[in-house]
Image 1 (cartoon, rainbow, N blue to C red):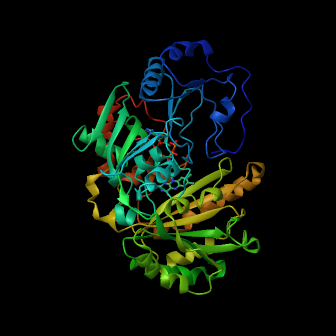
Image 2 (image 1 turned 45 degrees about the vertical axis):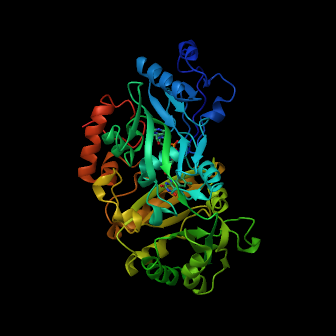
Length: 476
Ligand code: FAD
């Protein structure tokens, strides 16, 4: 990853008339380097990614996706697939090739009686929560509302509801997929079951998913949720308390630990903004009474700086972190699964979490287990069923702070990960890998057995590795 901005090329890389043919069978917008809006359209969440595709094919539906895949294949053009555009490694956009951009395909339709939702491949989790909560329903999504449904689900999908309702992939009932050949198939337990297995964790390797069908569960609409912050000096004590608190938590209680600074959110008093702090952020998927009882000990622990853990609308809570990770800032991530929160591991976390140069950098630990761990490992391509916690170390800086500042933040994330080596569980969540995490880390994410099976299915559905602009599974 680099923060250096590339100069605009003197001429577009491809003869733009080459795309006239695609235009004939394409209803959406085709953005070429000469088209107004191209520079905005090629930008994704991570502002450090600066790639210049030959064409951004903004699809309006399945037929557009088919047309774009066939067109790119016939001309041997690189393909990148964009869902929410959130992947830190920037795999949603490529240089010179065609970006199959689903950002206009965000429809969500809910069948409340059947407790199902059909979600288009470019939707964001905020879209899903908004529509499903109108019926008092939800499924497991991510912890930030502007994250894409597609990329998150295809990697597994961890979030506050997972301990009660499983991962996003555990709630996936079916997917509609445009294959590398430009065909349209439906994958479910009964149709293309091998493909369905691979889609549940294997990432964007097997085709372009134009829609997902999810199982929904009654959630809220009011849930006990929110953060409690303590001063950074209390980190060791808070983590030791949290270790027991999390281990004894009911499945309904999802929680993460966020270490960094107090974000400058309007709901928090200004004098606390940017103060180094540890937060435990919870969401209880049961009744308000059960939720209040489940978090009582946490709220009473030590001397919180601020306690915002209270009955809240679930959909609003799910967007509560959106402004702490803005589009266009520069990001660099390192991540690993953790064997547990031993005293030694928590000491490493406490020693490193607050040594970043930027007040925007932070680390997050997810508490897994519960329903995630009860699904047999071989049931889906998501491998880390038995891991209790993982950590993501998120170096953040603003575009104007590139250069030395960027190098220092990047070094902080690497140093932090290195110090955690003795405490790793083995494996890493594939959706948390960055662009400098190589093929061996992708293998590590799956383990040999699951990787081998994914490679076999890849050989069946995409033998030429057309979809390789991703955390790639090579055809086996
Ligand atoms: P994009 O960048 O659009 O796509 C990433 C890759 O996914 C593409 O290269 C492609 O290979 C594939 N892809 C995307 N759309 C499609 C499609 N329609 N069909 C086929 N392949 C496709 N993950 C969690 O599990 N839980 C979290 O709580 C969580 N929180 C996050 C918070 C932030 C702020 C960020 C930036 C990320 C978070 N993630 C989380 C990680 C997230 O799962 C990945 O970044 C994921 O790739 C985002 O999906 P996207 O559709 O936005 O990605």
